[in-house]
Length: 85
Image (cartoon, rainbow, N blue to C red; front, top):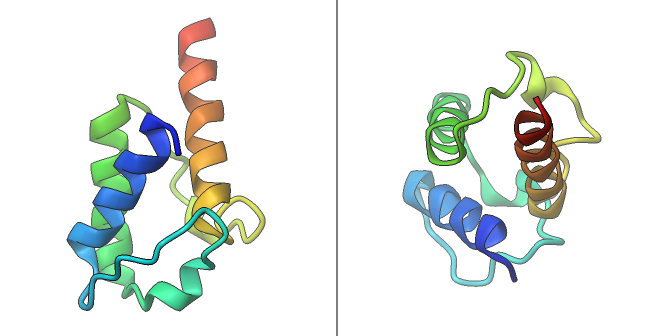
């Protein structure tokens, strides 16, 4: 697992009511039982950690935020987009 994935998993664990040690890239976000307020805090933490801006309705985009791995890929794309700008 790379640095981006590791950091995102750390952020997820920090905000979970019941942190798990078995979070993988294939883990569906729905399995993590994250409440909506916690999800907002997770998004803020990810933005701060990676100096990116996640579109406001990103959590409604089912394909981009279906699994931990899809979140990692979306964050990597936003990092690359910022680097190119």
